[in-house]
Every structure is written in C-alpha cells, then in structure tokens.
Length: 250
Length: 358
Image (cartoon, rainbow over all chains, first blue to last red; front, side, top):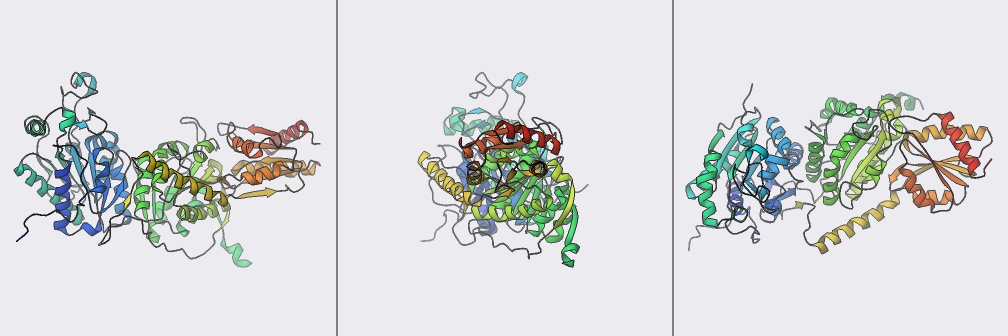
C-alpha cells in the first residue's frame, strides 16, 4: 500500500498540549513540512518564545532554544551571527512579538538579520488567560477589556507587519490566515518563501499567521474559524507586504 | 628580562579588558554604549573582526544579553560589557542564563547610583552582582580586579570559570579602573580553541534534538534543577580568591576590594609607618566570597574595618564570615566619591582606638 500522508520528519510524535480548535498545531505542521521540503531540518535551530508555544521544542524535531518574553529575535541573532550557515527561526505570538518584544523585532528586521520569524497573531494573550493583546480589535472583549477594547483608553491594534514593511533590512514579509484549506495552502507557500529568503542570504523574513484562540475568544472551534474569516482578516489584510525576497537597498 | 619590558603596554582598563578577552578567544561580543565602559565596545568593533570574531552593537542592554544567550547556547565563547544601569536591564537575561546554565562573561564597570546617578566610579552594585542573577535563586561568579593587570588576568579567568561551571561570570570593576591607564602584560598563551560543547544547539543533524531552556513546570522537577544549581554553587566556593597584605602579625585588618583596596593598602602602609600593626584582606572573588579567609583573620585580629565605595554592602558578607569573632567597622563613600589615603588612615586609626589597638 502506498503511503500518501505522514508526519513530517521535523515534527516529533509528542501529543500537543494545545486546546481544541487552536491553530498552533497547523502552524507547527506547516513550518515542519517546509523544513523537510527544503532539506534543512538537521541544520535548523528554532527559538521558542513565551506564551502557549513556549513548549514548541517538544513538537519540533530540531535543536531549540527557549527565549525570555519578547527576546526571541535577539536570541536568534546571537545564534545566527555565530553560526551563519544554520537555518534559524523564531516562533512568537502577538503579545511576545508586538508588545514586550517590539524593540527586538524591529531592530532584528532593520539589521536584516538572516532569520525567519513565524508570527502567530490571535489577537489575545492565550497562555495567561485571555487578556488584551496589542493586536486585540476595537470592541473585542478580553479579561482586561471586559466591556470591549475602547481605543479612547486602550489604544488601537498594532499592525507590526506593516511597520516592518518600511524597513530596508527586510527581504520577505507576508500575512496569511489559518482558516480553510486554500488559505492554509497559501500560508505554507509564504512560510516556504520566507525560509528561502533566509537560505538565499537576502535578509530578514517574517510570516504573520492570523490564528484562532477559541478558549480566550469564548467560541467553539468552528465559530472561531468563522470569526477569524469575517472579523480578523478585514482588520489585518492578507498578502505579501514585501514579496520580492531580496533585501531592498537605499 | 628585556622582553618583559617590551611586552609591557600602557593601556586603559577598558581596552585591556577587551584585549584580554580577544586573547582568551572570545568569539562574539554584543553590547550597548554606556559610560564609563564604551571603550570596550569600541575596541571590539576595531579588533574582534581581525580575529574572526563577531561584533554587534545591540539596540539595548536587554537585547545584548539575549544575543549573548543565543550565541552561548550555540556553543560560542561570548561576552558583553556595560555599566550599572545596563546591568539592571540585563538582570532578566542573567536569570535565564543561569537557569539554562549557559556560560558567558559580563563586564560591569560600575558607576554611581541610584537611577541615572553619575559616571563616577562606584561599588554600589555589589549586592546586585553577588546576591542573585536576576530573579530566582541563581548566582553569578563575580571577580573584582584592583589593577588593570588584574582586570586583564581576571577577564581571561572569567571565561575559564564560566565554561567550567556553565554559569555567567562577571568582572566587577569601576569607572576609574576602566578609564585610567596602567602598564599591562598579556600572557601570550596560544588562544585555546574551543570544541563546541555537546549540549550546544548547532543543528541536530541526524542526532536527537537538543533543547536549551529554563522552564520546568513541575515543582518537583524545578526543585531538583535548583538543587543541582545549588550543588554547583557549593562547588564554586573552591574558587574563592583573595590577597592578604601585611596580615600575618596585624592587630587590625581592613577588608576592601577593587579600587578602594588600593587606597586602603596605602593607608595600611602609612599606619605601619606610624607603628600601628594594620593589614589588608582583599577579596579577589566576591562571589564566591572568601569567607574562610575572613573568618581566619577575624580570629587573629582585634577588629576588621570594611571600606567600600558604597553605603555598606560587602560589609554584610564580612559580618557573616566574622560571625561575632571580632568587631566589624565600616567606612564608605557614595555617589562616586573616592576616599583618599589620609582619610582612610584617619578612619583606620579611629577604628583601631575603638577596638583597643594602639
């Protein structure tokens, strides 16, 4: 019998601790498939962040470092600078990357660090129990915005990927969404291009993945998928923000 | 020997530290500018590349210490340098470094505080250096040079100890030692090449993946990890180093480290010239603290005067070591003020009279 589907070699067979309907598992699998397809699993070094994906190293069958909250791009910089022929990637959530780690992500990008960042944006702090994230939408209820995020006091969501698109050190930037087969296929293509940009030595690459958090959102997995499609995508438009895979100059 | 004279180089303390690190085979330096230690970064920017090393100016001390974490975890011999406010920002990273047991060297050229304070020399960060490495129960190895020669020597030793114990090692010095010039001799041992340790994350190849982390969710597992760390800190006590100066027949001792120990040494000589049998006990490592040497001295002298450029921090370790065997006095200057030899001589004479030594 011919085997047509298998677990990627870059994933372990450890049962994942993620909640039902959470898209971390999908994102992990896409990254692992790309590492396999590019043949770089053995020379990949991942950097886990703080949040629900803190234990990502239990699921990726690659060398991993666990970084302090928000500091993954700095840790990845340290690894890549001393091991320039390795494939170095971070896996960070929106709280980690877009709040406490804004300095580290911006400067890694503007330095053109040859690393790849997988940015999971689910508009909420999942691990700490559903507090407001920098990407929480106006009006969205969280445990720290119980009446909905009021921009008058809590400000507006941060579109970090758009901010990074202005920087010359960036080689590839895209935002995709983990809902539906077509979008997930597009997301994988973006992840592959991001890693390819690193392999080409072109500069910094990042893929933002709009993701679900049914528990913190107070929704069923199916409703969460629908809400992602109907509400998050209009607030965070999809597509390649820096598509050319080449570091821009001057 | 003629060559010895030729090999003596007049250098700023900060530059001597940087040169010593290069000769010790440092492979990567990450840092952020702050007075009075920026010459270390500038020296590294000019010279580390010539030796095949990596220099990178980080966007903050927070980023710098995390770059150190990444590079150390990748198996590189790595360092950073900063001054007091920068160490405050690095406390988070230090905690993760000790938790993940990653070796590295941190140079702290102390300045006056609290807050922005000033850029004058100080010893007010002794607690911060010796009592913990950020949050949690972790410890740094801490070496405290009194001369530029010793700053160079201890920088090399810091790499050796950091790697032996898989732990951050800090060279704790001050703005004067960083800024002043003295002759220094570098021991031209060939740079030891470092085999990347088996635990380093350098790509798993066909082997099992390695993980560098400081998280252990189960209390029993985290306690077991802490017990291992505490065992290591107990083993580190064997690394305690100190200098005893004119202490053998002393009736009164001065305890001082770093810059202020040099001034105290002059005060001890002047006291001796006036017939007062004084001696100096100078900790060279302040973590581990040379408690046994202090206790042994306390059993023989009538009192120990601790002198610091702080409100009194090391004096707590002196008191713990003395454990009531002798009176412990304290004299300190703060805010970057430096005591003079006559000032310390007067304090020493006053203290000697207090404890009944004439």
